[in-house]
Amino acid sequence: MAFVVDASVMLARPLGQPNAIAALVRARLDDEVGLVPALWWFEVRNALIINERRRAISEAETARAVQEWAQLDIAIDNSPDEIAIMRLARKHRLTVYDATYLELALRERLPLATLDATLAEAARQEGIAVVGDAV
Image (tube, rainbow, N blue to C red; front, side, top):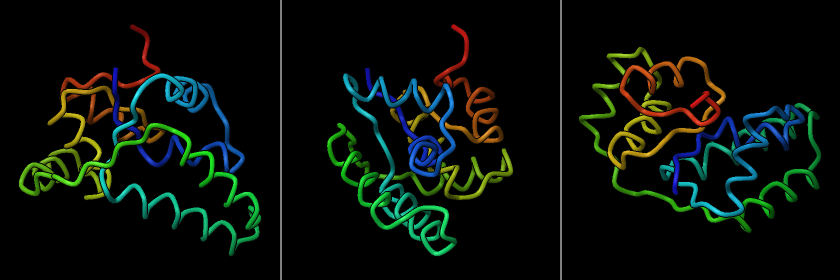
């Protein structure tokens, strides 16, 4: 089964913040498709480069993360619903970036993997399963 993957989950490991949810998502990506909005590609790379500048990670660690992600079955969605994204951002007081992940999960009727508590709560309020929640 596919699921939507937020940047926060993918960044946990390379930024040295591993946790149970990130490990669960990584394991699921061995057998399942991770669906992401187009902004994900830029968001994760921007976070890596910012952390390089802060000397929190090295260029080699960035390269390893990007190389690992390239081996995963990550599908990029290029069809966001602008009206729905803006509505969700307003309703749940999310950034447009976070609302984009929620809109994708709603549109595709897929669970959402995120480490962002506000986004996870918005997903629950919209009836979207959050990866890592007890079944």
